[in-house]
Image 1 (cartoon, rainbow, N blue to C red):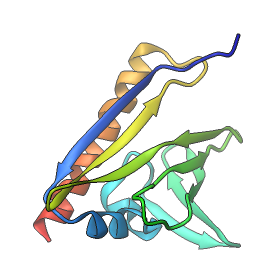
Image 2 (tube, helix red, strand yellow; image 1 turned 60 degrees about the vertical axis):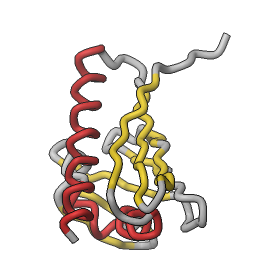
Image 3 (cartoon, rainbow, N blue to C red; image 1 turned 180 degrees about the vertical axis):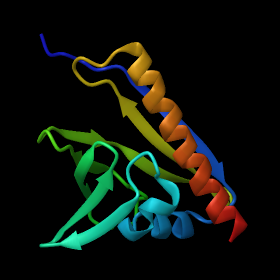
Image 4 (cartoon, helix red, strand yellow; image 1 turned 90 degrees about the vertical axis):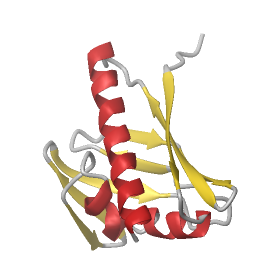
Amino acid sequence: MPVVSESRHISRSIARSTDDVYAYASDPTNLPRWASGLGSSVEHADGRWFVDSPGGRLIVAFAPRNDYGILDHEVTLPSGETVYNPMRVVADGDGCEVVFTLRTRPGMTEADFSRDADRVLADLDALKELLERG
């Protein structure tokens, strides 16, 4: 029987257009401004995006640009493990909602999962603050 991970959908409403939020969040050079849980600096080299994180150098690969608000991305950890992260920008009137699906990984404790959820929420709060402030 396949192993199914636990998921938690973490979201924030943002009083900016879907296009504005998607354009900003899909640009890897903006990651250090709002996704501190991911890393502090970004470099593009050899066709890939590298992020320096407290745990080491990561590789981040976003889904190709699209008209559907899909910001899914894979993060390859220094160990070589790749973590798939579903993320969407969904229209909501004149604004939008950003939804990140956090999933458990093998060996992850409930405390680890809660800590990751708190980091994702803090990142989404930072994204909201940056974009609503203009």
